Image 1 (cartoon, rainbow, N blue to C red):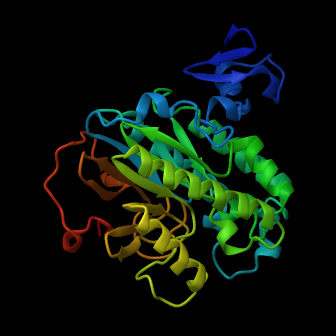
Image 2 (cartoon, helix red, strand yellow; image 1 turned 90 degrees about the vertical axis):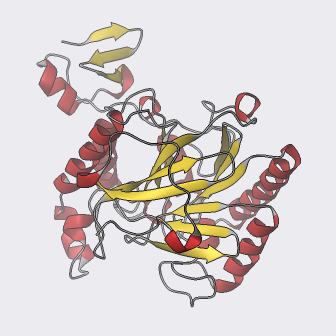
Length: 357
């Protein structure tokens, strides 16, 4: 059976909050592990007050040594079965997400066996598929399964989450933002690792903030302060994470569903370049894509979950060196276990933002 530490239950190698039990304790260990829902506080490293506590600035603002992290996107439990003829309203109450659970479990197994361990694992939005304002009950079930799966992630590897449109709604409200924050932490925040400054943005504020203009304004004011602070402190790198990419191929492309409106895009990209942002990692497109705007690279990573194009279900290895950041995408079935932190130098022309077809 399980073991107690205060209000925490250990079942196998996973830890659960007693407050989050869904079923009576009188069950066998394997049944308990399957049915109990881990507390989100024990699975996701949540930001509070716009700071990720595990990576305090005072301990991480100076460069130390090369490191790497794993970036992924769109676990989106529920989309694979639903993606098809578009009759979402007819299909949605009856969908399942067993395939996404299988793929997410595979991602956990891969990450747990990496050598050396990554500094963190970040998922760039659309963690779940059910819209919070349309299908809250289904979303709760998807969230429970997400927490069950990722509770098996090595506890030494922080799971960091970014919100997507399916997490806060296409037109977010204060209620959908508050609900997201309760489960996954702040919707935008910053953290420092080894001299690199990482900023997580809520991209939905740039897409449609019509119901929350004050929240969008607060994020941009905060962003301006963070960029200036990073410059003042001389951070080694400035890296952004968000769900919706500013563009999917090139900075001046027309507005489509998968990018940000061009006037807002141009204004924000100019700001990022002015402050020396070097990389922006995104999801949303369900295909590998991206490009350059002068010295700023935007990287679009396809999904762990549903694929729209011909890419593999996969994740990205991002190596952070003193004067460079390099990245390689791998399918889940072809993911390396041993990570080299001194790879061959790459250029824009040999960018590793290509699917491994």
